Length: 284
Image 1 (cartoon, one colour):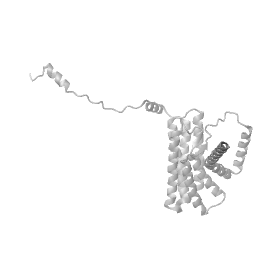
Image 2 (cartoon, helix red, strand yellow):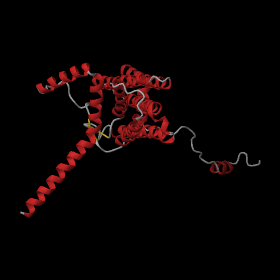
Image 3 (tube, one colour):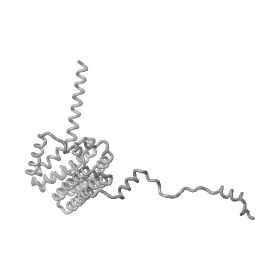
């Protein structure tokens, strides 16, 4: 009756059934699942606390700049760099390096060594330049972000024994060193700082995204034996820093900032000299 008990009808009705795709979340790759599982278990506390301290210093430096305390803002940037170095050293020493720590460190660095120095330079020296002033400060932040992104990509390949481009903490320290040296020499009210800082900010932005190689202390093994002269040099450097901290601080970061282009020029000169020697030998 009406085909209710008809087996043939049941077969036809079953043949019309369509298989629908199962609705649900997309499959997560195994690597991402492992990372999320590690994050659920927790994060390493000590390195993360130092990184957070770095971030707090960067924010406080911005507040100090807004309040007109430029010298204090520069000193806080130096303190942020100290905390940034400690967190990396502690992570490598205790073998607590993690992807979470790398990402947090990059965000903290962008605030402390990108945004804070740029705001400091703008309010301290670049405001009279108008649009060119804030564009210069903005360019510094953008190049700093690009430098950090490139570092995170190349951290396991290229940048093991050296840095490619000026590290953003060194660029920030160069700005802080200029401010500290300026007040140390009693140059308050000098108009030439506007021109100097405009040129410096463009130079630092270009060096950060350049391909110049800079020396890195990360791969230096302090547990190994080193030459005796290195110990004497370190003691002499510490004594000079205690005696004249502003001058030594400025000189150290100035030499480090210029070391990339200078080494590149030296290597280029050596290569040209070797090629000339080969040509001379071939002609003889």
